Length: 532
Image (cartoon, rainbow, N blue to C red; front, side, top):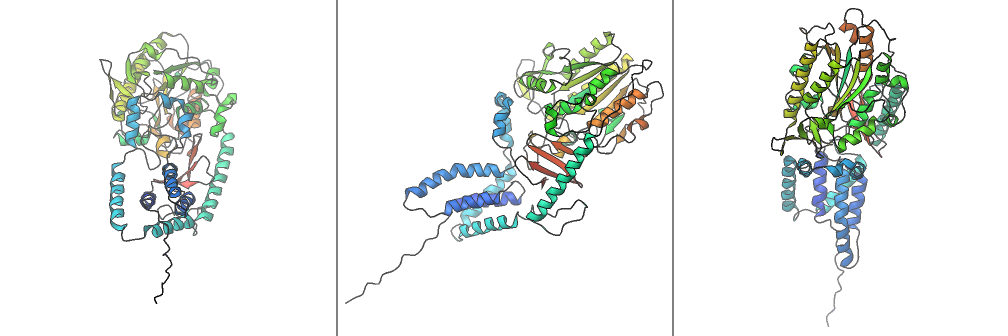
């Protein structure tokens, strides 16, 4: 008689399968600094994939559900803005087909694709020999418990400037509290700053003030185009080396410029009525200036821009950009006039105008991302930032010559709204400005005096302290006060009000704290080092 030996079936441990490759790619991208990895969500996602399920159909259904969840989680782990931002910005729906194709192409990073291809080959080679699920889960647990991979596990500093010897969550909380305290103090100090304009001097020789609010021009963009050292800036009288535009969008930038006579307010305060003393053009009006507005664009982007100008005490545009030849087509198909044509037409009218002094606010989108050059046959072609920037700088150079030849006294203030993000960074693709990074808000602000007794033989004086719009307002007030006496450029720039590099949009903020950039996105409570 034989005895049947009952054997217990071997226990089969759950496996992640191809999801191991998914997590392996994430680990490598995190190590490269290309992801804002949420360790807890990824750990929970992996746990859901490993949860034993009975039968054959439930595991298959789980895989069907896991694919869209995995895609959504991967996108959430990137630095890109949430999808809701697409629906909050109506102009996105007006993007031309050419611009959409161009934007999609910018998401393709061939270097990263090469790395991902190598990872896939490595996975195919080692998967049959290693239990990668164990490795994946171990790495997820390690990242979750450690707080971050080494690429992001960096020392932080206290308010006093001492380097903390501890790392991880506790030190990050302390650092965030220090930044919050410093930021609160910043806004309290800014709330008390204001430009004191002099009384109107009826005997002073009048001069016009031209504020050129230029969309998409930063030092970083000029550097990328090989144009940082250009002839226009060399002929300026005053250049602000560390000017911060405080935002990366046009509407808020315009409001900040028009309210330049007070310290920098919190972003949310821009949409509340401002004190009268903050309004730069109102202060100039009290000195006898007639405000005027000119734009070189007209279309959906213009209509949205005008909603920001509503309530800022500016008149309607003096001329329509539709009265000029079309030089460019914007990303939404709207017509854009060449700056030189608009400036020359305005100046020809200004020469005939009997008004003693005019304050002009001019906005141009010539350098905006996605603009295309119009050909003689009506078709369009892609135009690089370098080509458009050269035309813009040459046009402005020629316009200054024209004003100088007229003999009329004027002050031209070049104040870019923000940069174009020509090359992008780890958090944003080229052209994306959701986050007001330093490379976007560090803009080439400069002042040119025309027929004011200035010397064109010497180079510009440089303001090397951190400044923003308040310094421009203060300088204009000082220049008016100097009328009747000799021009003293050194006195104009001496001890101008400083403003730390604090920048905000509705969904993000970037500050320079103790010499290092920190960013906080909407919904986050902690500040983190801006990945550079």
